[in-house]
Length: 392
Image (cartoon, rainbow, N blue to C red; front, side):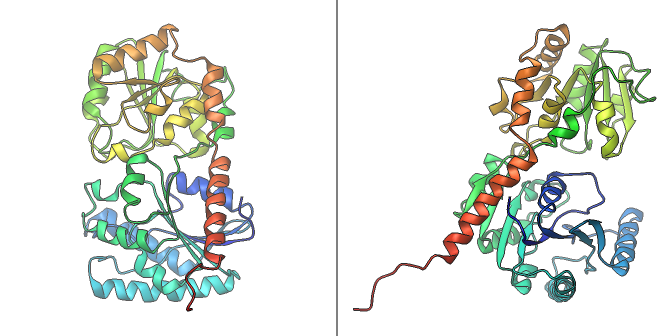
């Protein structure tokens, strides 16, 4: 792993649900100084209660200053004008952020900064920062989210072209971003293996899960526009004797599913509680829709299920296919239900040892080591004298 570096990371809000960004930066923070910059936003806000509340919370956080969340890990909430499509707003935001970052870089003694962005719209800020190295880590096809304007592509292209290194978490993303920057590399997500593998067999389930009858077919994560509710409804009706447990926040209407007798929505849980629920799953689900958004997704929960040692049934996503020897990849509700039934009956696709072997190879530590090699190689290339023709 790279060591002794200073990293300014543009990402989503730190105190949200853990993501690949959180996992990678936590690993890097063992040996490097991290300044995590909370989200500057990707869409025009409304005057609704939710957006107004978020803006007020961000203002309070900005006033408090950078929060220390680890020995060398700090989180800063910038103050920005939220209308990102305005050239005036971008100019003001760029100046404000550059000033704030200059202050914190000096205060934290950050030198030769690596700018590591998960956000696609920060190229105008990066210009003002003048970091020694720029890395764009692309984990989503941003233009395919329903709440983000496709104009984001222009901003993302500018960042890609300006980057010293681009990482893409899915093959589809890699193919597109490489057209903007030949120094693009495919790097699928990892897993917090030690946490999920630590789940002891036979431990008592949490009180709200204890009354749920076995077998349990489970899902954890945000239930949003990318979850195939029609598929789930059809599968749940085909398997009335299985309990379907959902752990996570629902941001779409799930009333059709919740009305089924074998549905159990237990709500959002803290990350440190998650494994106590998931260890009771007999099968884990990846029930995404297949569309332009999800074909670019590398589902972290797939590897989290594998680290738990449980069978997985997934829709046919491009990033799931390489795991076909240990994961049931199913197309359509009937095939999906049959795959679940086979696993519950003991007709396993893979042994627990085979599943565990795959998960152990995909830790976040290993991913950070791979990224570190790419960073150091690129830095060496930049330092190498350029060869050219003579003047004679």
